[in-house]
Image (tube, rainbow, N blue to C red):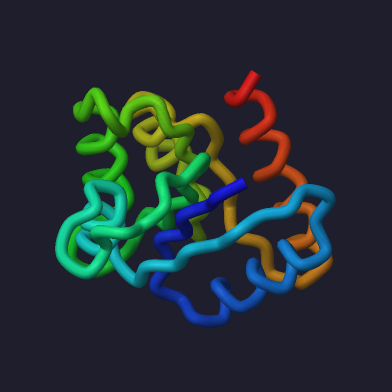
Length: 135
């Protein structure tokens, strides 16, 4: 499974990388630090011309340059990108953020865990989201 993670918090990136090493499904994680880079990766622009097509995108909501809402909206408006399932991973537990993400087409909304054991569980949830959308 090829995953694009758009996350500006290096600690969260590192925890997810470690969690995926423990996962049931072999996965390759590509990481970008902001929304503009995420869209460049997805559209294979600039330095991402050889980027792999992700099977799943995991987006932070609050990123520099373009936030996760903007990235999600642009993805779902693009016929080539709208088929890729998107999972929001955010520190926000506000109901309006969750409702907005779902309305924009997110497959799942997860509040960022605080402990490594929770990141391990998150890796399993990400796998389940991917398996559900793949079938």
